[in-house]
Amino acid sequence: MPEETNKTRYSDAELEEFRVLIQKKLDKAVGELDFYKAQLSDLADNEDTKSRGLDDGAGTMESNHLNTLVARQQKYIQHLENALIRIQNKIYGVCRETGKLIAKERLKAVPHATLSIEAKMNRRKK
Image (cartoon, rainbow, N blue to C red):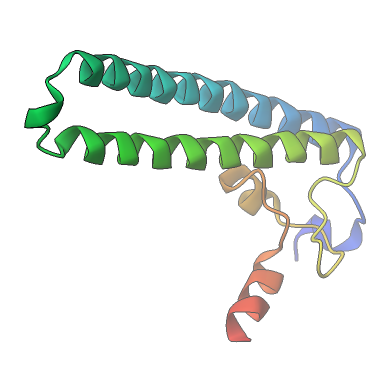
C-alpha cells in the first residue's frame, strides 16, 4: 500500500519538488502561448496585405485553429498557476472530493489535477 494513504498532506520537500515541476511546465506553456499569439499576429498582418476579394477561407480556418490553441493554453496556464497557489497554501495534492492525497504518479503526469483517480472514476459513473 502506498505511503500516501496515511498522510493528510505532502511534506514541504515534496511540495517543493512539485513546485519546481509545475514552474517548468508553466514556463514552457507561457512560451508556447507567446508563440501562438505571434502566429496569430503574423497571420493578421498577412491577411491585411492580401486582397480581401480573393480570400479562400484558409486564413480564417488557421486563425480559428490558433485562437482555439490560445484559449486552451491560457486555461492550462491558469490551472498551473492555481496549482502553485495550492502549493503555497500547503493543500496541493489533496483531492477536492475525497480529501485524500492524490497519488504522486498522477500528479507527475497531470500536475494541476485536483481529483484523485478514485474521485474521477466515480464522476464518470454518474
